[in-house]
Amino acid sequence: MMELWKSTVLEGNKAFAEGRDADAMYHYKAACQRSERLLPDWFDTEAATVAFIVSYQNLAELYFRQEKNQQGLDAYRYLAQQLKKIAAIKNINSTRQAITNCACRRVATELAYTVKKLNIESPEASALVYEMSKHNFTTVSQHNKDYLQ
Image (cartoon, rainbow, N blue to C red; front, side, top):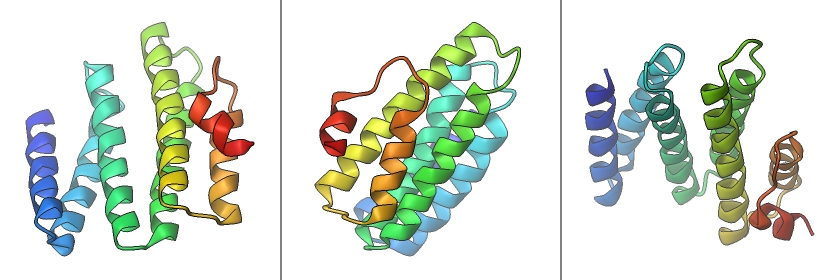
């Protein structure tokens, strides 16, 4: 299953690099679906989490390139919501908890950086960055602190 995900992402990346946005969209959406199937039960929690994150960030990047900022933000919002759901599971093992918390912090940092880089100045973007940053994790990245000031 992981190999199928990887080949789908690589096809999407190739289409993205060649400017074939419709093909990239197809492959990235397929990668998102495959990664969601991997996430709950894959024996390598870190690999499954990375696959999930990469899939949705690739999709968001494509939307941002097309100047579809709302859809890009929606992809990040969905990603953050799913990671927070996993982090909130009772009786989650400590390894999965640590991986998920780290992933949530990373996603929040990358979203803050992307919003700033693309100069997306909408109340919704600011609220999403803030929402992700205020989650009860042990640290908040410097990028997020800079963005929120």
